[in-house]
Image (cartoon, rainbow, N blue to C red):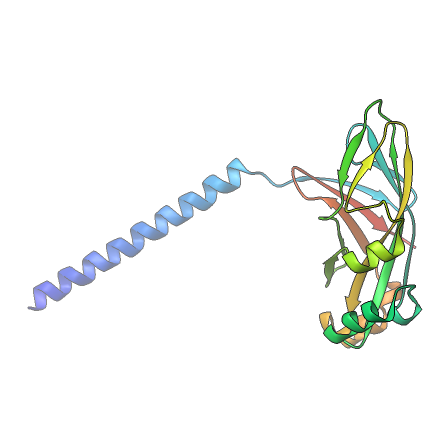
Length: 189
């Protein structure tokens, strides 16, 4: 009986060691197969290529209370239901298609972040801030330029009080792409 227990424990230990070795091997394999992305950084006001034919330039960024945003009361109420203390970071960008064909730009996965917080574009405010024919997939006709507003919600519960109090002086980054090249625009003031 004792020998059977010892044998069972030995088998369990060997299985655990085998699974651990296979897990480590798989992690190494994945990390060598998919390397870390290279980083392309620009600052606000500089041009960054979204595609070979399409460029983006961040014109401005301002953080203000939701009460100062031009949107209907129903939208404000819905936003405040999530959290009463909320601010909006509005980023004005200019997107230029310099190519000789139409280009479709997908902006729904663009993210604004700082060291402790990140969020995507708020769709309700996006549609309220921009022209009626602007969508989260923007069709840019050849040799055209569009200015759009990207609104991002920032709630106080998403960070510490000290970070909330110094929100306007923090460094933000607009992340346009994550892989294979991480494209970032720094919101340097």
